[in-house]
Length: 89
Image 1 (cartoon, rainbow, N blue to C red):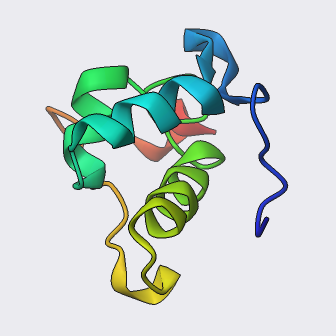
Image 2: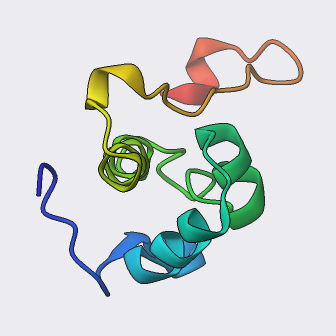
């Protein structure tokens, strides 16, 4: 496994999104990382997808039997309003 994710390890701990849960969702059909993000909230935790975004793409590629390079990763959203850099530091 590319990113060492094996069920029941967690993809997104704050939302308790287990790899097993994602695997069962993939069997139901959603094949787009953005759909998966909306249905599971994977990538919406404190890390904002820095950890699980690529893992979701890897699991999706494995389930579909396609190369990882062909699977798009879930999109990011810009902040609703401009944020000063001092706040982010």
